[in-house]
Image (cartoon, rainbow, N blue to C red; front, side):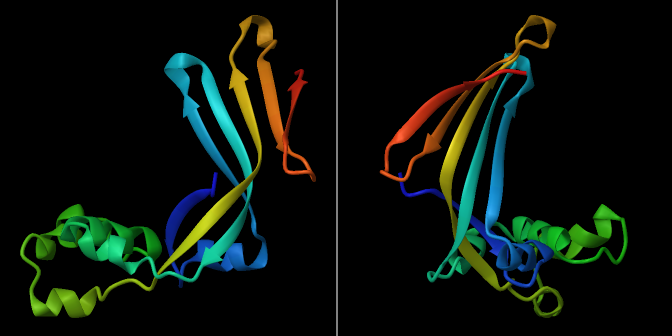
Length: 141
């Protein structure tokens, strides 16, 4: 496995935090199934630019990326989305392409959690060992 690839605005708070601390966690939770996977990983910037992904996205998705990456000027969804149905040159200047970066989260451990009665959850951990193998262990609440 080569890791989990993700994209972020290079000027965002998240990018600054990743530069200061490369430890990341990914969490996949399925409430209806009573299960989750928690992944501990080390983030590594990728030299390849991530801008292609955002350039291929629909205009409204690019606007959403801006909305998540910058302070809100107003709360009206209409004011955010009105110019993006048919973007004009003025709208393109107002929201230029984000400086998108690409990174890879390299897993160090996986914890598989299953909900059980009386809070006696089943927790299985796979941790990457120094020899490159994955070691399995159980955690108890």
